[in-house]
Amino acid sequence: MNKNIFLELSKNFEIDDEWFSKYDMTRNNVPSKFPLGELKELTIKKYILRKECFPNEYKNTFTYSLQYDTEGRLLRSGSASKFYIYMDSDGEYCYGFKNNKRKPSEKELTEKFNKIKRKILDYINIASNDSPVDFLKYEKDISESVLIVILQFYTKDRVLDIVNKEVLLEAARILGLNFDDSENRVYVNYMVTKELKSLDEFKGWSISKLSNFVYKYCNESINKQNEIQKSDIKTNNDILVNEEIAASVLDKQVINKNIIFYGPPGTGKTYNSLNKALEIIDNDKYESLERKDRVKEFNALLDLGQISFCTFHQSFGYEEFIEGLRSNEEGNGFKVVDGIFKEICKKAIGDSSKNYVLIIDEINRGNISKVFGELITLIEDDKRLGRENQIKAILPYSKESFGVPNNLYIIGTMNTADKSIALLDTALRRRFEFIEMMPKYNLIDKDIEGINIRQFLKAINKRIEYLYDRDHTIGHAYFLKENLNLELLNSIMKNKVIPLLQEYFYGDYEKIALVLGGTCSKGESSKFICKEQIKVEELFKGKSDLNFDDIYEFSVVDNPNIDAFLELY
Image 1: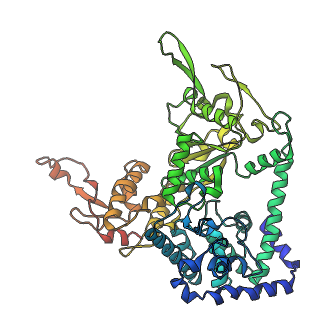
Image 2: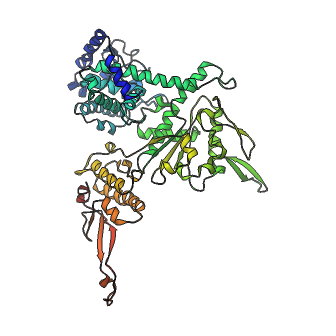
Image 3: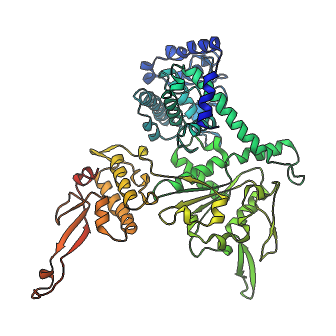
Protein backbone atom coordinates (compact mmCIF):
# COMPACT_ATOMS: atom_id res chain seq x y z
CA MET A 1 0.00 0.00 0.00
CA ASN A 2 1.23 3.49 -0.79
CA LYS A 3 0.40 6.83 0.81
CA ASN A 4 -2.11 7.93 -1.84
CA ILE A 5 -4.21 4.78 -1.40
CA PHE A 6 -3.92 5.08 2.38
CA LEU A 7 -5.27 8.65 2.33
CA GLU A 8 -8.01 7.73 -0.13
CA LEU A 9 -9.25 4.99 2.23
CA SER A 10 -9.67 7.58 4.99
CA LYS A 11 -12.48 9.33 3.09
CA ASN A 12 -15.00 6.53 3.66
CA PHE A 13 -13.76 5.20 6.98
CA GLU A 14 -16.39 4.73 9.70
CA ILE A 15 -16.17 3.34 13.23
CA ASP A 16 -18.52 2.26 16.01
CA ASP A 17 -18.87 5.67 17.66
CA GLU A 18 -20.72 4.27 20.67
CA TRP A 19 -17.96 1.76 21.54
CA PHE A 20 -15.17 4.27 21.01
CA SER A 21 -16.95 6.91 23.09
CA LYS A 22 -17.11 4.36 25.89
CA TYR A 23 -13.43 3.53 25.35
CA ASP A 24 -12.42 7.20 25.44
CA MET A 25 -14.28 7.67 28.71
CA THR A 26 -12.15 4.95 30.32
CA ARG A 27 -8.92 6.78 29.47
CA ASN A 28 -9.21 8.69 32.75
CA ASN A 29 -9.46 5.55 34.88
CA VAL A 30 -5.72 5.12 35.34
CA PRO A 31 -4.82 8.80 36.02
CA SER A 32 -7.72 9.10 38.46
CA LYS A 33 -6.43 6.13 40.49
CA PHE A 34 -2.76 7.08 40.07
CA PRO A 35 -2.51 10.87 39.55
CA LEU A 36 0.53 12.09 37.67
CA GLY A 37 1.71 14.17 40.62
CA GLU A 38 1.80 11.07 42.83
CA LEU A 39 3.70 8.72 40.48
CA LYS A 40 7.03 9.92 41.85
CA GLU A 41 6.08 8.57 45.28
CA LEU A 42 4.71 5.27 43.95
CA THR A 43 5.90 2.32 46.06
CA ILE A 44 6.93 -0.98 44.55
CA LYS A 45 3.93 -2.72 46.16
CA LYS A 46 1.68 -0.18 44.50
CA TYR A 47 3.53 -0.80 41.23
CA ILE A 48 3.07 -4.56 40.94
CA LEU A 49 2.00 -7.61 42.96
CA ARG A 50 1.39 -11.22 42.00
CA LYS A 51 -2.23 -12.40 42.06
CA GLU A 52 -1.44 -15.75 43.69
CA CYS A 53 0.56 -14.10 46.49
CA PHE A 54 -1.68 -11.08 47.12
CA PRO A 55 -5.20 -12.07 45.92
CA ASN A 56 -6.88 -9.18 47.75
CA GLU A 57 -4.43 -6.44 46.83
CA TYR A 58 -3.06 -7.08 43.33
CA LYS A 59 -5.95 -5.24 41.65
CA ASN A 60 -4.92 -2.01 43.38
CA THR A 61 -1.56 -1.81 41.57
CA PHE A 62 -0.45 0.51 38.81
CA THR A 63 0.41 -2.30 36.40
CA TYR A 64 -2.98 -4.02 36.91
CA SER A 65 -4.70 -0.73 36.18
CA LEU A 66 -2.69 -0.29 32.96
CA GLN A 67 -3.85 -3.70 31.78
CA TYR A 68 -7.48 -3.93 32.90
CA ASP A 69 -8.94 -0.52 33.73
CA THR A 70 -9.72 0.44 30.13
CA GLU A 71 -11.76 -1.03 27.31
CA GLY A 72 -8.69 -1.26 25.06
CA ARG A 73 -6.57 -3.57 27.23
CA LEU A 74 -3.52 -3.47 24.99
CA LEU A 75 -1.22 -5.07 27.58
CA ARG A 76 -3.15 -8.18 28.58
CA SER A 77 -0.92 -10.57 26.61
CA GLY A 78 2.65 -11.55 27.43
CA SER A 79 4.44 -12.09 30.73
CA ALA A 80 4.82 -9.67 33.64
CA SER A 81 8.48 -9.16 32.68
CA LYS A 82 7.29 -6.44 30.29
CA PHE A 83 7.06 -4.24 33.40
CA TYR A 84 10.77 -5.01 33.97
CA ILE A 85 10.29 -5.48 37.72
CA TYR A 86 7.77 -8.15 38.69
CA MET A 87 6.98 -10.71 41.40
CA ASP A 88 7.66 -14.41 40.88
CA SER A 89 5.68 -17.37 42.23
CA ASP A 90 7.70 -17.29 45.46
CA GLY A 91 6.51 -13.77 46.13
CA GLU A 92 9.97 -12.30 45.51
CA TYR A 93 10.66 -9.32 43.29
CA CYS A 94 12.91 -9.91 40.30
CA TYR A 95 13.75 -8.47 36.91
CA GLY A 96 14.84 -9.87 33.56
CA PHE A 97 13.37 -12.74 31.58
CA LYS A 98 13.97 -16.51 31.43
CA ASN A 99 17.74 -17.13 31.59
CA ASN A 100 18.31 -13.46 32.39
CA LYS A 101 16.00 -13.44 35.39
CA ARG A 102 17.64 -11.86 38.43
CA LYS A 103 16.61 -11.57 42.09
CA PRO A 104 18.18 -8.31 43.26
CA SER A 105 19.21 -7.26 46.73
CA GLU A 106 16.94 -4.79 48.50
CA LYS A 107 19.31 -1.95 47.60
CA GLU A 108 19.53 -2.95 43.94
CA LEU A 109 15.75 -3.41 43.75
CA THR A 110 15.24 0.12 45.08
CA GLU A 111 17.70 1.52 42.53
CA LYS A 112 16.07 -0.38 39.66
CA PHE A 113 12.57 0.70 40.68
CA ASN A 114 13.55 4.35 41.08
CA LYS A 115 15.12 4.20 37.63
CA ILE A 116 11.85 2.87 36.15
CA LYS A 117 9.82 5.62 37.84
CA ARG A 118 12.19 8.30 36.56
CA LYS A 119 11.95 6.90 33.05
CA ILE A 120 8.15 6.86 33.14
CA LEU A 121 8.01 10.47 34.32
CA ASP A 122 10.69 11.52 31.81
CA TYR A 123 8.76 9.92 28.94
CA ILE A 124 5.59 11.76 29.97
CA ASN A 125 7.51 15.06 30.07
CA ILE A 126 9.21 14.39 26.74
CA ALA A 127 5.87 13.75 25.02
CA SER A 128 4.18 16.71 26.72
CA ASN A 129 7.04 19.02 25.65
CA ASP A 130 7.11 17.67 22.08
CA SER A 131 10.80 16.70 22.16
CA PRO A 132 10.56 13.09 20.90
CA VAL A 133 14.24 12.65 20.01
CA ASP A 134 14.90 12.49 23.75
CA PHE A 135 13.12 9.10 23.83
CA LEU A 136 16.23 7.71 22.17
CA LYS A 137 18.55 8.51 25.07
CA TYR A 138 17.31 5.74 27.33
CA GLU A 139 18.44 2.14 27.64
CA LYS A 140 15.89 -0.63 27.23
CA ASP A 141 14.34 -2.00 30.40
CA ILE A 142 10.57 -1.57 30.81
CA SER A 143 8.79 -2.66 27.62
CA GLU A 144 8.18 -0.02 24.98
CA SER A 145 4.59 -1.28 24.72
CA VAL A 146 4.05 -0.40 28.38
CA LEU A 147 5.50 3.07 27.84
CA ILE A 148 3.18 3.67 24.89
CA VAL A 149 0.14 2.75 27.01
CA ILE A 150 1.33 5.04 29.82
CA LEU A 151 1.60 7.93 27.34
CA GLN A 152 -1.95 7.19 26.14
CA PHE A 153 -3.21 7.85 29.68
CA TYR A 154 -0.98 10.71 30.80
CA THR A 155 -0.56 12.79 27.62
CA LYS A 156 -3.29 14.03 25.33
CA ASP A 157 -3.36 12.50 21.84
CA ARG A 158 0.43 12.20 21.55
CA VAL A 159 0.54 8.52 20.57
CA LEU A 160 -1.71 6.07 18.77
CA ASP A 161 -3.43 3.25 20.67
CA ILE A 162 -1.10 0.81 18.93
CA VAL A 163 1.77 -1.16 20.44
CA ASN A 164 2.33 -3.63 17.59
CA LYS A 165 5.79 -2.89 16.22
CA GLU A 166 5.12 -4.33 12.78
CA VAL A 167 1.99 -2.19 12.33
CA LEU A 168 3.80 0.96 13.46
CA LEU A 169 6.70 0.36 11.05
CA GLU A 170 4.26 -0.30 8.22
CA ALA A 171 2.49 2.99 8.98
CA ALA A 172 5.85 4.76 9.00
CA ARG A 173 6.77 3.19 5.65
CA ILE A 174 3.49 4.26 4.07
CA LEU A 175 3.97 7.82 5.34
CA GLY A 176 7.54 7.98 4.03
CA LEU A 177 9.22 8.04 7.45
CA ASN A 178 12.61 6.34 7.47
CA PHE A 179 12.83 3.90 10.40
CA ASP A 180 14.48 0.49 10.68
CA ASP A 181 13.12 -2.28 12.88
CA SER A 182 15.63 -1.56 15.67
CA GLU A 183 14.15 1.92 16.25
CA ASN A 184 12.56 2.82 19.58
CA ARG A 185 8.88 1.87 19.25
CA VAL A 186 7.66 4.81 21.32
CA TYR A 187 9.57 7.20 19.05
CA VAL A 188 8.13 5.57 15.92
CA ASN A 189 4.59 5.76 17.32
CA TYR A 190 5.02 9.41 18.33
CA MET A 191 6.40 10.46 14.93
CA VAL A 192 3.74 8.52 13.01
CA THR A 193 1.03 10.15 15.15
CA LYS A 194 2.52 13.60 14.62
CA GLU A 195 2.72 13.08 10.86
CA LEU A 196 -0.86 11.80 10.63
CA LYS A 197 -2.25 14.73 12.65
CA SER A 198 -0.50 17.17 10.31
CA LEU A 199 -2.43 15.83 7.29
CA ASP A 200 -5.67 17.52 6.24
CA GLU A 201 -7.38 14.14 5.73
CA PHE A 202 -7.24 13.44 9.48
CA LYS A 203 -8.15 16.87 10.84
CA GLY A 204 -10.75 16.55 13.59
CA TRP A 205 -10.25 12.81 14.04
CA SER A 206 -10.11 11.48 17.59
CA ILE A 207 -7.01 9.51 18.53
CA SER A 208 -9.23 6.40 18.87
CA LYS A 209 -10.57 6.72 15.34
CA LEU A 210 -7.11 7.44 13.96
CA SER A 211 -5.66 4.42 15.78
CA ASN A 212 -8.42 2.15 14.55
CA PHE A 213 -7.93 3.30 10.96
CA VAL A 214 -4.15 2.88 11.03
CA TYR A 215 -4.31 -0.55 12.64
CA LYS A 216 -6.98 -1.82 10.26
CA TYR A 217 -5.32 -0.84 6.98
CA CYS A 218 -1.68 -1.30 7.98
CA ASN A 219 -2.51 -4.76 9.28
CA GLU A 220 -4.27 -5.55 5.99
CA SER A 221 -1.20 -4.34 4.10
CA ILE A 222 1.06 -6.59 6.18
CA ASN A 223 -1.23 -9.59 5.72
CA LYS A 224 -1.21 -9.13 1.96
CA GLN A 225 2.58 -9.07 1.98
CA ASN A 226 2.63 -12.24 4.10
CA GLU A 227 0.19 -13.95 1.74
CA ILE A 228 2.56 -13.25 -1.13
CA GLN A 229 5.39 -14.83 0.86
CA LYS A 230 3.22 -17.74 1.90
CA SER A 231 2.27 -18.49 -1.70
CA ASP A 232 5.97 -18.98 -2.39
CA ILE A 233 6.33 -21.72 0.23
CA LYS A 234 5.53 -25.22 -1.03
CA THR A 235 5.81 -28.37 0.98
CA ASN A 236 8.85 -30.54 0.25
CA ASN A 237 8.15 -34.12 1.45
CA ASP A 238 11.73 -34.60 2.57
CA ILE A 239 11.76 -31.56 4.84
CA LEU A 240 8.32 -29.95 5.25
CA VAL A 241 5.84 -32.60 6.34
CA ASN A 242 2.93 -30.57 7.70
CA GLU A 243 1.39 -27.12 7.85
CA GLU A 244 2.94 -26.32 11.23
CA ILE A 245 6.44 -26.68 9.83
CA ALA A 246 5.50 -24.60 6.79
CA ALA A 247 4.18 -21.92 9.12
CA SER A 248 7.43 -21.95 11.11
CA VAL A 249 9.34 -21.46 7.88
CA LEU A 250 7.09 -18.51 7.06
CA ASP A 251 7.81 -16.96 10.47
CA LYS A 252 11.51 -17.09 9.71
CA GLN A 253 10.95 -15.38 6.36
CA VAL A 254 9.78 -12.12 7.94
CA ILE A 255 13.38 -10.99 8.34
CA ASN A 256 15.39 -11.13 5.15
CA LYS A 257 17.89 -13.99 5.18
CA ASN A 258 20.71 -11.86 3.79
CA ILE A 259 21.18 -8.31 5.10
CA ILE A 260 23.94 -5.74 4.74
CA PHE A 261 24.12 -2.66 6.96
CA TYR A 262 25.99 -0.02 4.98
CA GLY A 263 27.05 3.52 5.68
CA PRO A 264 29.92 5.85 6.60
CA PRO A 265 32.27 5.14 9.52
CA GLY A 266 30.79 5.41 13.01
CA THR A 267 27.10 5.03 12.12
CA GLY A 268 26.43 1.94 14.24
CA LYS A 269 26.67 -0.81 11.64
CA THR A 270 28.37 -3.33 13.91
CA TYR A 271 26.17 -2.30 16.86
CA ASN A 272 23.04 -2.89 14.79
CA SER A 273 24.33 -6.21 13.47
CA LEU A 274 24.63 -7.37 17.10
CA ASN A 275 21.06 -6.23 17.83
CA LYS A 276 19.75 -7.81 14.65
CA ALA A 277 21.46 -11.12 15.46
CA LEU A 278 19.82 -11.25 18.90
CA GLU A 279 16.48 -10.30 17.36
CA ILE A 280 16.77 -13.20 14.91
CA ILE A 281 17.77 -15.68 17.63
CA ASP A 282 15.01 -14.78 20.14
CA ASN A 283 13.60 -11.25 20.07
CA ASP A 284 11.27 -11.76 23.05
CA LYS A 285 14.14 -12.90 25.22
CA TYR A 286 16.65 -10.19 24.37
CA GLU A 287 14.52 -7.15 23.44
CA SER A 288 14.33 -5.63 26.94
CA LEU A 289 17.98 -6.18 27.91
CA GLU A 290 20.31 -3.29 28.59
CA ARG A 291 23.26 -2.74 26.27
CA LYS A 292 25.88 -4.44 28.48
CA ASP A 293 23.63 -7.48 28.99
CA ARG A 294 22.98 -7.73 25.24
CA VAL A 295 26.72 -7.80 24.60
CA LYS A 296 27.11 -10.49 27.26
CA GLU A 297 24.39 -12.63 25.67
CA PHE A 298 25.85 -12.05 22.22
CA ASN A 299 29.27 -13.31 23.37
CA ALA A 300 27.64 -16.32 25.02
CA LEU A 301 25.95 -17.21 21.71
CA LEU A 302 29.30 -16.80 19.96
CA ASP A 303 30.80 -19.32 22.38
CA LEU A 304 27.90 -21.71 21.78
CA GLY A 305 28.34 -21.39 18.01
CA GLN A 306 24.80 -20.16 17.35
CA ILE A 307 26.36 -16.91 16.11
CA SER A 308 29.62 -16.79 14.15
CA PHE A 309 31.65 -13.71 13.32
CA CYS A 310 34.34 -13.08 10.72
CA THR A 311 35.91 -10.13 8.92
CA PHE A 312 36.60 -10.12 5.20
CA HIS A 313 39.92 -8.76 3.92
CA GLN A 314 41.97 -8.96 0.75
CA SER A 315 43.63 -12.26 1.74
CA PHE A 316 40.43 -13.96 2.92
CA GLY A 317 39.47 -16.75 0.52
CA TYR A 318 37.37 -19.82 -0.22
CA GLU A 319 39.60 -22.00 1.96
CA GLU A 320 38.92 -19.92 5.07
CA PHE A 321 35.22 -19.44 4.33
CA ILE A 322 34.00 -22.75 2.82
CA GLU A 323 36.67 -25.43 3.00
CA GLY A 324 40.31 -25.93 2.13
CA LEU A 325 43.27 -28.26 2.35
CA ARG A 326 45.66 -28.14 5.28
CA SER A 327 48.70 -30.19 6.13
CA ASN A 328 47.83 -33.26 8.22
CA GLU A 329 49.23 -33.93 11.65
CA GLU A 330 51.94 -36.22 10.30
CA GLY A 331 53.05 -33.62 7.79
CA ASN A 332 53.02 -36.09 4.93
CA GLY A 333 49.74 -35.20 3.31
CA PHE A 334 46.68 -33.00 3.38
CA LYS A 335 43.29 -33.04 5.02
CA VAL A 336 40.07 -31.10 4.32
CA VAL A 337 39.32 -28.41 6.91
CA ASP A 338 35.89 -26.73 7.11
CA GLY A 339 35.71 -22.95 6.90
CA ILE A 340 33.54 -20.74 9.12
CA PHE A 341 30.57 -20.69 6.72
CA LYS A 342 30.47 -24.46 6.26
CA GLU A 343 30.80 -24.98 10.02
CA ILE A 344 27.79 -22.85 10.92
CA CYS A 345 25.76 -24.34 8.06
CA LYS A 346 26.35 -27.80 9.51
CA LYS A 347 25.28 -26.63 12.96
CA ALA A 348 22.12 -25.03 11.57
CA ILE A 349 21.21 -28.17 9.59
CA GLY A 350 21.69 -30.30 12.71
CA ASP A 351 19.52 -28.02 14.85
CA SER A 352 16.67 -26.85 12.63
CA SER A 353 14.57 -25.68 15.59
CA LYS A 354 16.83 -22.66 16.15
CA ASN A 355 17.97 -19.74 14.04
CA TYR A 356 21.70 -19.31 13.38
CA VAL A 357 23.49 -16.12 12.38
CA LEU A 358 26.74 -15.45 10.55
CA ILE A 359 28.02 -11.87 10.79
CA ILE A 360 30.52 -10.78 8.14
CA ASP A 361 32.20 -7.51 9.05
CA GLU A 362 33.63 -5.38 6.22
CA ILE A 363 31.99 -7.65 3.64
CA ASN A 364 32.91 -5.27 0.81
CA ARG A 365 36.66 -5.69 1.44
CA GLY A 366 36.67 -9.33 0.33
CA ASN A 367 36.81 -10.70 -3.20
CA ILE A 368 33.26 -12.05 -3.27
CA SER A 369 33.70 -14.47 -6.18
CA LYS A 370 36.89 -15.79 -4.58
CA VAL A 371 35.36 -16.19 -1.10
CA PHE A 372 31.90 -17.59 -1.93
CA GLY A 373 32.81 -19.39 -5.14
CA GLU A 374 29.96 -21.47 -6.53
CA LEU A 375 27.97 -21.13 -3.28
CA ILE A 376 26.91 -17.53 -3.91
CA THR A 377 23.79 -18.90 -5.62
CA LEU A 378 22.93 -21.18 -2.71
CA ILE A 379 22.41 -18.34 -0.21
CA GLU A 380 19.38 -17.04 -2.14
CA ASP A 381 16.10 -17.46 -0.26
CA ASP A 382 14.44 -19.82 -2.70
CA LYS A 383 17.63 -21.86 -3.33
CA ARG A 384 18.04 -22.89 0.29
CA LEU A 385 17.34 -26.36 1.66
CA GLY A 386 13.63 -26.98 1.96
CA ARG A 387 12.59 -24.26 -0.47
CA GLU A 388 10.92 -24.92 -3.83
CA ASN A 389 14.08 -24.25 -5.84
CA GLN A 390 16.59 -25.74 -3.43
CA ILE A 391 20.04 -26.36 -4.89
CA LYS A 392 22.97 -28.40 -3.64
CA ALA A 393 26.54 -28.21 -4.87
CA ILE A 394 29.40 -30.71 -4.77
CA LEU A 395 32.28 -29.15 -2.85
CA PRO A 396 35.64 -29.35 -4.65
CA TYR A 397 37.83 -30.75 -1.86
CA SER A 398 35.59 -32.94 0.31
CA LYS A 399 33.27 -33.94 -2.60
CA GLU A 400 30.35 -33.52 -0.19
CA SER A 401 26.87 -32.56 -1.36
CA PHE A 402 26.26 -29.19 0.29
CA GLY A 403 23.32 -26.81 0.67
CA VAL A 404 22.56 -23.71 2.74
CA PRO A 405 19.94 -24.27 5.46
CA ASN A 406 16.85 -22.10 5.70
CA ASN A 407 17.48 -21.20 9.36
CA LEU A 408 20.82 -19.49 8.70
CA TYR A 409 20.85 -15.70 8.47
CA ILE A 410 23.77 -13.74 7.04
CA ILE A 411 24.40 -10.18 8.24
CA GLY A 412 27.09 -8.10 6.59
CA THR A 413 28.47 -4.67 7.38
CA MET A 414 29.90 -2.36 4.75
CA ASN A 415 31.84 0.86 5.19
CA THR A 416 30.91 3.13 2.28
CA ALA A 417 34.10 5.14 2.82
CA ASP A 418 35.94 2.08 1.48
CA LYS A 419 33.69 1.30 -1.46
CA SER A 420 30.30 2.54 -2.64
CA ILE A 421 27.43 0.18 -3.39
CA ALA A 422 27.75 1.09 -7.07
CA LEU A 423 31.17 -0.57 -7.12
CA LEU A 424 30.08 -3.64 -5.18
CA ASP A 425 30.10 -7.09 -6.74
CA THR A 426 26.87 -7.44 -8.73
CA ALA A 427 26.29 -10.98 -7.48
CA LEU A 428 26.32 -9.72 -3.91
CA ARG A 429 24.07 -6.75 -4.62
CA ARG A 430 21.38 -9.00 -6.10
CA ARG A 431 21.29 -11.37 -3.15
CA PHE A 432 21.28 -9.02 -0.14
CA GLU A 433 18.86 -6.50 1.28
CA PHE A 434 20.75 -3.26 1.92
CA ILE A 435 19.89 -1.16 4.97
CA GLU A 436 21.47 2.28 4.99
CA MET A 437 22.98 3.55 8.24
CA MET A 438 23.58 7.29 8.15
CA PRO A 439 24.55 9.64 11.01
CA LYS A 440 21.73 9.99 13.55
CA TYR A 441 22.26 13.35 15.20
CA ASN A 442 19.38 12.90 17.61
CA LEU A 443 21.30 10.18 19.45
CA ILE A 444 24.03 12.62 20.50
CA ASP A 445 23.80 14.73 23.64
CA LYS A 446 22.73 18.15 22.42
CA ASP A 447 24.75 20.36 24.76
CA ILE A 448 28.27 19.70 26.06
CA GLU A 449 29.80 22.67 27.92
CA GLY A 450 27.80 25.06 25.75
CA ILE A 451 28.62 23.26 22.48
CA ASN A 452 25.69 22.00 20.42
CA ILE A 453 27.29 18.73 19.33
CA ARG A 454 24.42 17.86 16.99
CA GLN A 455 24.79 21.11 15.05
CA PHE A 456 28.57 20.81 15.18
CA LEU A 457 28.61 17.33 13.56
CA LYS A 458 25.84 18.26 11.13
CA ALA A 459 27.88 21.25 9.89
CA ILE A 460 30.95 19.05 9.37
CA ASN A 461 28.96 16.49 7.40
CA LYS A 462 27.25 19.04 5.18
CA ARG A 463 30.68 20.36 4.16
CA ILE A 464 32.03 16.85 3.56
CA GLU A 465 29.01 16.04 1.43
CA TYR A 466 29.58 19.21 -0.61
CA LEU A 467 33.33 18.72 -1.04
CA TYR A 468 33.28 14.93 -1.41
CA ASP A 469 30.06 12.88 -1.02
CA ARG A 470 27.60 11.57 1.58
CA ASP A 471 29.34 8.17 1.76
CA HIS A 472 32.25 9.81 3.61
CA THR A 473 30.39 11.65 6.33
CA ILE A 474 31.26 11.22 10.02
CA GLY A 475 29.07 8.93 12.13
CA HIS A 476 27.39 9.80 15.40
CA ALA A 477 28.95 6.85 17.26
CA TYR A 478 32.25 8.68 17.74
CA PHE A 479 30.44 11.13 20.01
CA LEU A 480 28.43 8.60 22.04
CA LYS A 481 30.68 8.64 25.08
CA GLU A 482 29.88 8.71 28.78
CA ASN A 483 30.85 11.89 30.63
CA LEU A 484 31.63 13.69 27.37
CA ASN A 485 33.49 16.95 27.98
CA LEU A 486 35.75 19.39 26.10
CA GLU A 487 38.87 17.36 26.75
CA LEU A 488 37.28 14.17 25.42
CA LEU A 489 35.81 16.06 22.45
CA ASN A 490 39.31 17.29 21.54
CA SER A 491 40.60 13.72 21.75
CA ILE A 492 37.80 12.48 19.45
CA MET A 493 38.54 15.23 16.92
CA LYS A 494 42.32 14.71 17.00
CA ASN A 495 42.39 10.90 17.03
CA LYS A 496 39.22 9.94 15.12
CA VAL A 497 37.69 12.68 13.00
CA ILE A 498 40.74 14.51 11.65
CA PRO A 499 42.56 11.28 10.62
CA LEU A 500 39.45 10.34 8.61
CA LEU A 501 39.46 13.75 6.92
CA GLN A 502 43.18 13.35 6.15
CA GLU A 503 42.39 10.04 4.49
CA TYR A 504 39.36 11.37 2.60
CA PHE A 505 41.13 14.42 1.18
CA TYR A 506 44.54 12.83 0.70
CA GLY A 507 46.26 15.35 2.95
CA ASP A 508 44.72 18.37 1.20
CA TYR A 509 44.65 20.61 4.27
CA GLU A 510 42.93 23.45 2.47
CA LYS A 511 39.84 21.27 2.14
CA ILE A 512 40.25 19.83 5.63
CA ALA A 513 40.38 23.39 6.98
CA LEU A 514 37.24 24.27 5.00
CA VAL A 515 35.41 21.38 6.66
CA LEU A 516 36.64 22.35 10.13
CA GLY A 517 35.85 26.05 9.94
CA GLY A 518 39.15 27.58 8.77
CA THR A 519 42.63 27.96 10.24
CA CYS A 520 44.39 29.89 12.95
CA SER A 521 47.95 31.18 13.27
CA LYS A 522 50.71 29.29 15.02
CA GLY A 523 50.37 29.46 18.80
CA GLU A 524 46.59 30.07 18.66
CA SER A 525 43.96 27.50 19.56
CA SER A 526 40.73 28.95 18.18
CA LYS A 527 40.66 26.44 15.29
CA PHE A 528 41.46 22.79 14.75
CA ILE A 529 44.02 23.44 12.00
CA CYS A 530 47.00 25.80 12.21
CA LYS A 531 48.35 27.45 9.04
CA GLU A 532 51.86 28.93 8.99
CA GLN A 533 53.48 30.76 6.07
CA ILE A 534 56.98 29.58 5.18
CA LYS A 535 58.88 32.39 3.47
CA VAL A 536 61.34 31.30 0.79
CA GLU A 537 63.98 33.90 1.73
CA GLU A 538 63.98 32.64 5.31
CA LEU A 539 64.08 29.01 4.25
CA PHE A 540 66.99 29.54 1.83
CA LYS A 541 69.01 32.29 3.46
CA GLY A 542 71.43 34.07 1.21
CA LYS A 543 69.55 32.98 -1.93
CA SER A 544 67.57 36.12 -2.69
CA ASP A 545 67.51 35.43 -6.43
CA LEU A 546 65.29 32.32 -6.11
CA ASN A 547 62.02 32.70 -8.00
CA PHE A 548 59.96 30.43 -5.70
CA ASP A 549 56.60 31.18 -4.12
CA ASP A 550 56.12 31.07 -0.38
CA ILE A 551 54.52 27.89 0.91
CA TYR A 552 52.19 27.11 3.80
CA GLU A 553 52.63 24.48 6.46
CA PHE A 554 49.57 22.98 8.14
CA SER A 555 49.40 21.23 11.47
CA VAL A 556 46.73 19.94 13.86
CA VAL A 557 46.22 22.13 16.93
CA ASP A 558 46.96 20.15 20.11
CA ASN A 559 44.21 21.49 22.37
CA PRO A 560 41.69 23.67 20.56
CA ASN A 561 39.59 25.84 22.85
CA ILE A 562 35.81 26.02 22.90
CA ASP A 563 35.80 28.68 20.13
CA ALA A 564 37.04 26.06 17.65
CA PHE A 565 33.78 24.18 18.20
CA LEU A 566 31.42 27.13 18.48
CA GLU A 567 32.71 28.95 15.39
CA LEU A 568 32.47 25.85 13.21
CA TYR A 569 28.67 25.85 13.10
